[in-house]
Structures are given as structure tokens and as C-alpha cells.
Length: 371
Ligand SMILES: NC(=O)c1ccc[n+]([C@@H]2O[C@H](COP(=O)([O-])OP(=O)(O)OC[C@H]3O[C@@H](n4cnc5c(N)ncnc54)[C@H](O)[C@@H]3O)[C@@H](O)[C@H]2O)c1
Image 1 (cartoon, rainbow, N blue to C red):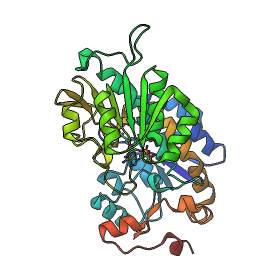
Image 2 (image 1 turned 135 degrees about the vertical axis):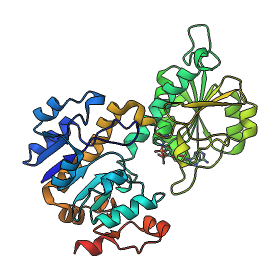
Image 3 (image 1 turned 180 degrees about the vertical axis):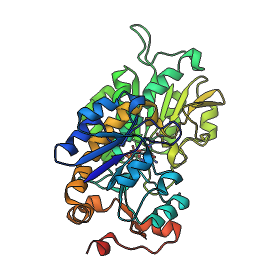
Image 4 (image 1 turned 30 degrees about the vertical axis):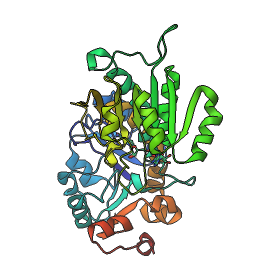
């Protein structure tokens, strides 16, 4: 199969669909890969590295889209990219269609076979192609929070780990899923005092087994959240209620009574945020202050560490990319129910039920198109 990797064109997007090691996984199996010139340049992946992995470099996205049987990307296709897709071509990338009627209409019109990373499921449950970005955001949340606790960034001037003779900072993590657990690891590593809250007691049990009395675990309710947040120097919001907006667990009143110069990092901002005072920010202007509390609410945190994020994403995507290239989309989707869950739009039909329902399309089950 001929696999094409265009350069990402969304504003400030430096990730790339395939790394050179992923290209090698494909070329070593006899597939051909074409990569747009400079696709990985911004994150230290040179055209020479791609060529060494067996790819050919081409000048324009137009050439990639017109020649490739499968396009591998990171972000959802922009209108100009949708217009270049063609009937039967495979598109393998993040799509996030439910809130995006224009993109959905364009993909339906294209006739392409559109597989969304974010709805592919895993044998162990969960969404394995989303998890790496939650890992990145969770780890970054402590890094970003620690930086903003510094005086020059508006914080109270506190070192998370303290020093001998001076108490460490108190990090409170709400939500002990992928984001929360990765934040927890970093906070413990930094030497902070750590409290983690979740509604899922089994999850808290697992963390207690691993971290013992190095952390405090609390069942999440309004009382526990209030007590923890009022004592915190840094609060990380990492809750998720699947399919729903994030619950506003930290109220405006709690924020107004927090320590001045404390920091909150609302990782759940992409689902509306779990602090009542949150609104989405960008890497160009990541924070704002409410009642003396610094809010960091960047909706695409992994974009800041595009190199790490690209490699983490490729680890999760390459297996299915190889299957799609080797077997062809029909066979690969027929053989693997988890990959099939990723099929959102196929040759003019919407094959993901939630997207069809939200955007008023007829829902056509993927199975019925695979024969
Ligand atoms: N801002 C970014 O760049 C970025 C990047 C990656 C992920 N995210 C977002 O971070 C959020 C968390 O993602 P995740 O992968 O960790 O999800 P996850 O499903 O692994 O974990 C969510 C956790 O929240 C817990 N939870 C639900 N309701 C709660 C409550 N009332 N109190 C305490 N805990 C509660 C759940 O039990 C679960 O353990 C999602 O909204 C995700 O989209 C944002």
C-alpha cells in the first residue's frame, strides 16, 4: 500500500502522523511511504531520517493526497485537506466529529474511509489511542503548575519539593484516571505532599497499594474537595465522566477562599473544565487569574511537547496502521472489532452511532458495509 504523511497545517500543530521508526515498520513490510517535505522538521525529525527509514519525500500535500491509498495524520483534516480526499481513500487520524458538522459533511462528501483514533477501543477497555495524550497532559500538569508557582509567573513563590527544613507544597489531584495517575507520579517524584480524590474507590485502592502512605487518597465529595482545595498550593483537575461535560467540582466560592498565589491546572478543560472559574486558554497565553489564584487551562497541552507526544501517539497508532496497510481496510476492520469502532465515516455513510445521532445522519453500522 502507498501511505502518505502530509505536514500538519492546523495552527501551532507540530506533531506528525508517522515518525521515522514507524515509517520503517511499514517499509520493512514492503509498503511505500511518502512524507511531505519538512513534515517533522519542527520537532527534530529531518527529511534525511525519513529517507533513511525508507520513505520518499514529496513537495506538496496535494501530491500526497492525490497519490496515497492511506493518509496518516494527527489532527482532524482542515477544509482544504478534506477537499483533497477521494472515494475509497483511507484517512487515519484524530477526527472528533460530534461537535464538528462542517468536517463531518466534508468527510461524508469525500467518500473516504475515515478512521478516528479517539474512538478505537482496546482489549483491556478504554481508549488506547487517547491514553498517550492523557499521560502527556497529566505529567505536564505538574511541570506547568510548578512553573507557575514561581514568583516571576505570578505564583506564591513556592518550590513543590521544599528543601530540608522547609515543608513541601501540597498538590491536590481530582480524578485518578490516566491524567491523575500521571500527575501523581510526577508530584510524588518532585517531593510534594500529594492528595488524590476519586469517586472510584477501586482506583484509590490500586494507588494506595502502589504509593502506600506516600500519598493520601480521599473519596471525592463536596466536603473532601473543599477541605483539600483550601489547603492546596497546586490543584490538578483530571476528572472525566464519559460522554458528558466535566462536573464543576471546585466552585467559585472555593476558589475565592484558596491561598493567594496558588495554581490550578484544569486538564479537563477540553470537556468544559472542572473548576467553575475555568475557561480555555492557549499556549500563547496559558493563564489568567481569578481571586489571586492562577488558572492554567490549555485545551491542547500535549501540543507543547510535540516531539514526545508524536512518539507516544505513534506507539499507539502504528499497530493498526500496519494492519490497515497490509490487509487493506475491509479485511483489517473485519478482523478487529476494536479497530472497527474507530470507523466514523465510510464511503459517504456515518458509521459511528453517537456522531450520527448528534449530527442527524442515518447511522449505518460498520459491519453492514464490510460484507
Ligand atoms: N487539556 C488537555 O490537553 C488534555 C489532554 C488529555 C486529556 N485531557 C482530558 O483530561 C480529562 C481526564 O482524562 P483521563 O484520560 O484521565 O480520563 P480517565 O477516564 O482515565 O479518568 C477520569 C477519572 O475521573 C474520575 N471521576 C469522575 N467523576 C469524578 C468526581 N466527581 N470526582 C473525582 N473523580 C471523578 C473517574 O472515576 C476517573 O478515574 C478528560 O476530560 C480528557 O479529555 C485533556
